[in-house]
Each structure stands twice: as C-alpha cells, then as structure tokens.
Length: 331
Image (tube, rainbow, N blue to C red):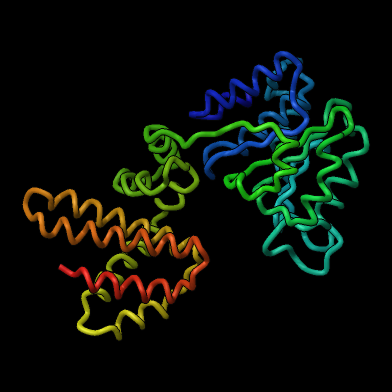
C-alpha cells in the first residue's frame, strides 16, 4: 500500500488513514515539517488513495490509477501521469506553458496558479474519482498567487483536494493557514536516516557527519553524504581554519571573497565546521580544558555567522567577520 513506504511518521499517516477510512478527507491539507521527512511521499500516497479504482480506501498501489498517480513524465515538467493529479511548484513548468515570458526563479507566480489550478479546479475530474493539487514548498507562493488561490481553496468543487507542503509554515499568509488543515511531520529518527543512507549504498564512514548535520532530514543526509559534497565540505573546514590561523587578515579576506557558494550551501558548510568544533571540544574536555573552551567559543562564533546568513547578510562579509572573530579566539 502507498502509505507503507512512509517511514517514521506514524502520527501523520494515522491521521490521513483515519480520514480516508471514514470518508472524511478534508479538502485542503497543510503538511508541515522539515524538508526531507516524507511530506511529499505522503501527499503522493494520499493522491493515490483518492484516485484509486482498486477498492482500497487507503489506495491499493496496484491499479492503473494508483500507478499513474505516482509515476512521472520524462523531461520538464516531470508531472504525474494521472491527469487528475497536478503539481504546483516554483519553476516546475516551462514559462510558455503557464503564459510567461521567462521562468519563475524566486517564487510560484500568479500565472502558474491561474494556468494550473484555477483553469482546472472548477471542472470535474477526468476519470471520475477526485482531482488533487499538490503545492510543493507552498511558502514560495507569491502574494498574488496566494490571493488568487484563496477563493478556490475555501470553496472548492466537490471532489477537489489541495495538499500544501511546507517547511516554513510561518511564511504562509494567515488566510492560507486558516483555510488549510495542518498535519505535522516530525524529523526522522537517527536509525531511520541511517537505514535510508544504507539503502542508497552510502559508505558507513560517511554516515556519522551526515546524520549529525541532517537534523532528521533524509534528503539532507543524502546530499551531505555525497562523495563530492563530502570532499568539498572537508576542504572548506580546512581552508577556513587555516585562514583563521594566518598571521594577518589577508588570507581571511581572500578566502571570504573566493567563496562561490549560495547561502544554503554555505550554511551547510558552516554547520559541518561546527560539528567538527563540537567533536574537538568534547574530546578536549578532560585532556586540555583550555582547548575545549577555545573550540566552544569558535562554535558560538560560527553559530552567529549562520544566524547572520539567515537574516540575509552578505556571505563574503559574514565570512570575513567570522574569520576575524575566530582569530580572536585562536588557541
């Protein structure tokens, strides 16, 4: 059955299963939780159950409708093969498909909502069971797109369902939040994340740091455990510590200006640095307490740099400031 593939989310799956078994499925759900914990898998499973023709209220997973709801077309967009299951996501469709002159780079546009949702939501399903719209990263909805959504979200045609996925529910308009029923998805446990890494053939020696930094996200752990990512991250940690230990600020400034990473990747690198500093501090507590204090202060400095990036600080300025601060607590 489709829901059997969702790991570590018994509460969320139980909520959806009860709704399906009692025939009381809400027309608009908001799946909230960290990225990479199974929200989209659950949305696909719910879609399969809603369009299933095999007679199982939870979706049989075997009928043609279930298979097509989960399968994706080749190329762009990688849309579900079932005509009654549609995805809304930033830059998911070529610009021409949604009536734009250029791709969506920063948000889900009102053009996409009009072309994909409003143009279809008022009509009955093609195959008679239900029509489902999955909105990936719903916090990316532009103000115009969110407002265009509202009336349809509040009073959809019978048999029409919306599933909004978000890791930042606080960024959604209150009017969107009030019209959707929340289902919470928790971070995955360490054993589950390790099991997923093993299932994907990731060598054991890469598991510890990936699990430590992933914060319960399977997709993040897989990205962090990638061989190229691991080598790049290790090089970053060595380079920044070398720059911090240099006699003058020249190497620090050069290092900061040479960084070619987006903020998300830079934050991941800084979290890797903090993981290394935390291990260093723990190892030094008994043998070299002074060294442990230095590592703890460096950890705090790196945490402040991550917070600055969260507030949209310039990466080069944040890194130059961080290295200067690390130099101030050099052991």
